[in-house]
Image (cartoon, rainbow, N blue to C red; front, side, top):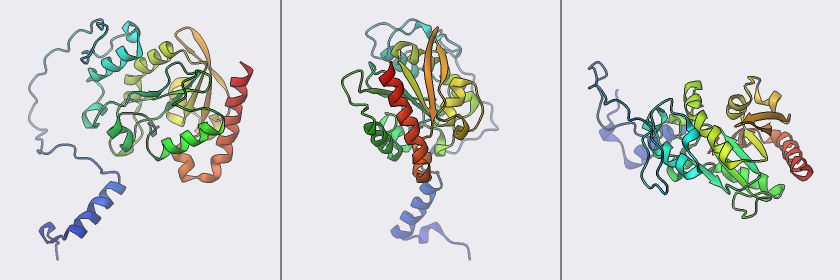
Amino acid sequence: MESNHNDMTPHDAADALRWLSEMGADEIIGEMPVNRLVAPAPKPAPAVARAVPAPAAAPVVVAPGTSAAQFHSLREIELALEGFDACPLKKTATRLCFADGNPAARVMLIGEAPGREEDIEGRPFVGRSGQLLDRMLAAIGLARTAADREGAVFIANTVFWRPPGNRNPTEAETQMCLPFLLRIIELQRPDVIVCLGAVPAHRLTGRTDGILKLRGKWVTATVGGRNIPLLPTLHPAFLLRQPAQKRLAWRDLLSLRQMLDAH
Ligand code: URA
């Protein structure tokens, strides 16, 4: 017999919701059905990007293909992203997830993409993987809350909005966000970059090997004419799923510590 959702008890409904959430269907895309067979009304031509007035408070409208070189502060980039509608991830995300930590830090960490908690809070790595990341960093004397440049980290992601259902961002999505990420790196001027997981490692090194092959090997990223040592390592979410691999992540953390101590 077909079940009727009206027969559901509140307990059944809570179970069904929990199940959907565990399957990754944890957001409502839209309340009204959309007839995709009807041609959409033509959109107004995108506004031409303009210089950001400083101090600016409102999002800046940024046309696709705009050079990020016009942004002169992290705040300007954040406002530009608020006004950047070309990335489809923005449509399903709750809010922009820009960056966290101390912009003066010697170390910049780059993750893959915001997850559910990050989407709600608007800050990278605030969920379970973020808590593990904070513990890993603390083990080598680093923290996103540190006020001094030596002990601090700055954290961003390869894309600035959560992909629906926590899927990996596509090549097109990471490409679209890349000019902003590169400009963040130029302005933040880290001494070293740490890529958490394959997505940022691939995007910033151009290599395509699996993360288990790339991890632990320092390479050089050239951003804005500066050569920056870059270390790919395992993503904390991977370590939560495979705790036995923490010993590899620990080796990478020690390598990072040595690199910082040597320079
Ligand atoms: N995973 C990421 O890669 N980034 C986040 O911000 C959170 C989880």
